[in-house]
Figure (tube, rainbow, N blue to C red):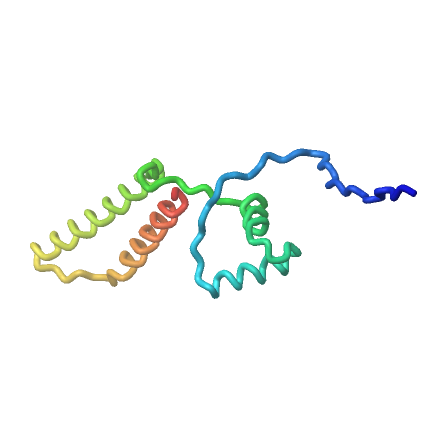
Length: 133
């Protein structure tokens, strides 16, 4: 009597789409606390403790803001126009004060109104600069 060899051979299912083999390695240094936080986030996202998959998902599915290098940031013509207006206002104020001093006149009015107008212009320029970044 012959014994039959009834061993089943298991073979992995073939993937319907073959993905390229990942061979590049990127090293990221984390504190133990950061590592645990990332693992917890991966668990919460349903990815187990697979940080590689978690990071890939975060990078590939996020809205990345592309920032221009500092050297390529430029002022818009509108910014230059506003800066010119501020310079003009400052010159007018200085001219008026100097004229009043030379004529020994009392400077009437509260200069804080002009100061507030200048502050508003400076804030507007600052927001223009931040928007161009």
